Image (cartoon, rainbow, N blue to C red; front, side, top):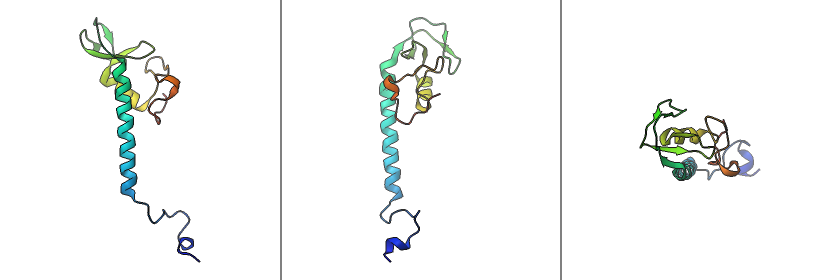
Length: 111
């Protein structure tokens, strides 16, 4: 019987290093976050006129402030929509898919 046969079937391989797995996970998350920020950067504009409301935080979209317009044309505070899109790939107002082809950040959940 080899040493591999003596280990329980669920045991991780001997060379498995949880620190390497953690580093890999952090790298994946960092890249996903950078991609999300780049995509949101393409949506950013300055609000020309005030009066609208961010449907995420329910605060006013003030004239001259930075906001993000999704492809469906709904407008939100940049920070609010970045937080929303980290967990979802759809518009919080109409649920239209934000990412072309539904790609999003890979593991994003639809809402």
